[in-house]
Image (tube, rainbow over all chains, first blue to last red; front, side, top):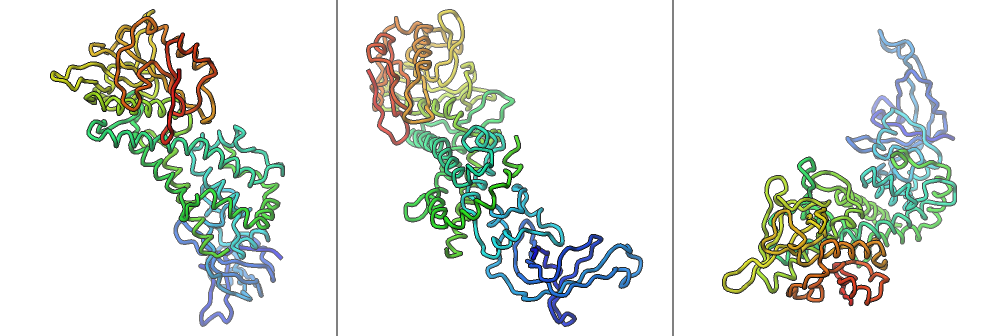
Length: 281
Length: 225
């Protein structure tokens, strides 16, 4: 069995179709075979979500030129009937699952992987989507890494904060732990420092500079110190969760609680290289 | 795991990552913010304002912007004093005489006419924009340690000791400065979020400066000797 994603904008189900059917117009030879698993995707702007699952039933293909005049004789129309067609409730969002799918290596634009009318995915990815399973260690690590400026990201990846080689020795859980330590050792003290500055300025009241920037020379754009303090305050606040638990602890707890799924994912991604966005410098 | 829980955690990770995206870039220049910034100038700036606030208890403090492109801009790297903001320290009595100027990261002349940039310097009321060593009254240097348990390094200690010599500060009497909550620091001093250097107190006394450790928001600092 193979697994596919098709853009379900193309499903026909109406008075003319007794069974839900998808049609694909293509010059390529479509590899979908009877019995293959198919997931339907919707692609609203900027998003991809998986909304139904089915098995491929009868498949027929004929040249489009039989139906229409003046078309490329190589264009074929595939009709794939869907068996066991059922909605996925809730729909699975790519943005939730993107770091858990082997298919997705374009971390900056994951939607591109699902732009084609149909795309093959691994059986493992199929299971991940159907089970709505999240690889927490990888999701947290890559989501945070991708938020950082590229140079800083490359530094963190290369300068031993994160072992960059995938050799089975360093799983994502270990890497996440390294990254968490880095976050706590470098960004949280900066947040505290800016909080301290904000506090001093606040206490100074009218004596504080009405505006304060860092700037070396005229070529350098001025950087507002208060604005940066606000940004760091927001970052620190975003790590707070209800019930006095920090987000970082909550992530660790999820990794622990789902240790079996995490281990399965670790094996799955063992031989997958770092996505280029993380590797490049 | 309930799918609500899962979604809530993903959303929380997303929010935090987006906040990190903003915090890790300077708002104006877009350059990256890293712990190096803390080491190089953010910690220094924190120390400066803590001193400003301490002085404000006994003195009248007046913020004086510079002018032109740097009117309200503090330097990241050592820069000339001209055009940079500073504070003026005035007496609270009668004529409100200007007693000192408090500068952040700007250069002063050493005894060989070279340029030095103490992180924070208290200068005489009459010091010009190209201050002479004799215009410098007290200096403080900020030493951010990546690890709060790390000590002031031998190199940092020696550099500061040398700066005191190069500015001729050792041979001049220390002005009487009322620093309120930082009164222990009314002296040339190395300020660190980390720990004291490994030098004995006697060496600090000989070199003519103090050290303050755990000088960080939310912590109680202490000083020696």
